[in-house]
Length: 357
Image (tube, rainbow, N blue to C red; front, top):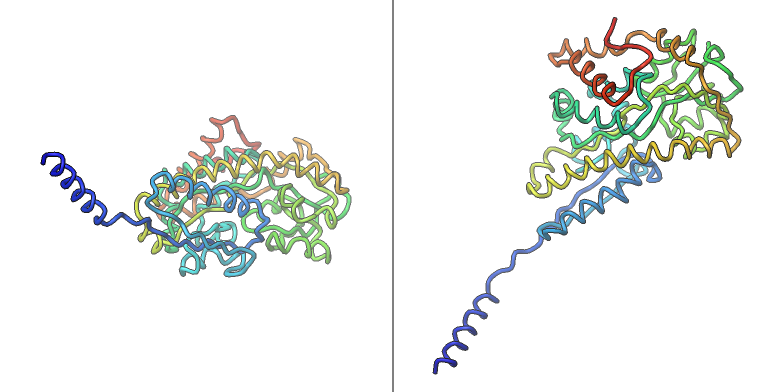
């Protein structure tokens, strides 16, 4: 009697447990956008590292699974259109090329207005990202565009000048037309009679090939990827420095719908993506220069004296930048000093002190 009762009770308990609803795994759709080709370094790493890493971490609890919908190559937005695309909800997560939006995202220009300081992408990425978390300006600017700042991306070790004809020094650039984007066009103000011509990375090859410009401000990896040796076989290595040009953001409305667990994973992986991207940029910089040489390119090193003279000839764009933020109620001067202090602590001191008039 006792055994029958025990078995009966166990059966009832099992039936009751079976009848209880099992918590279902929630699927979250995320549309990812960027206008650049999917062969671009930052997109390759987003596809091959960021997305799988988010999936792996979410799988540890099994509560959520992401349904990623990746859209690159201009299918939803062009390279300049990511900021607006995320703002309008055309994408949920995107990689914004910040150099195209200096008026809407002025604080993102911090590394760009301090050339000739550091050509270490890892140090610059970490310092900019720390500034973004210590000062409210950067996150506030993205918030005004209906976006949540996730992390900074640095995809280049240093801007250099790639030129169509043989050159040997900075003086050979006097009177030249040189393509660039955003704040790096201001560097050319330190070279007599040179003119900056705005453009985008995907446009530069044709601009050089057709003679619209004599040179372009580009980093070695991009020059190798886009076959610049064919149209600009001379590289003037001036070590202008690493610049943050990418920021991973999320649409604010999309973000508000996410569970805390998913938000935490996205934030953590964004930091890892930041460091990985910068490390890869450094690893492939030398390889890219070697590929450029192997493809017929020539590299000319700028002398320390020429670098110092070039830096001294540029208007103090860092002070202009800081004063602009100060006028808008942000601590631009504090951001500038803190950023350069972080780089100095890592061993990077520029040929010019941009905090001084």
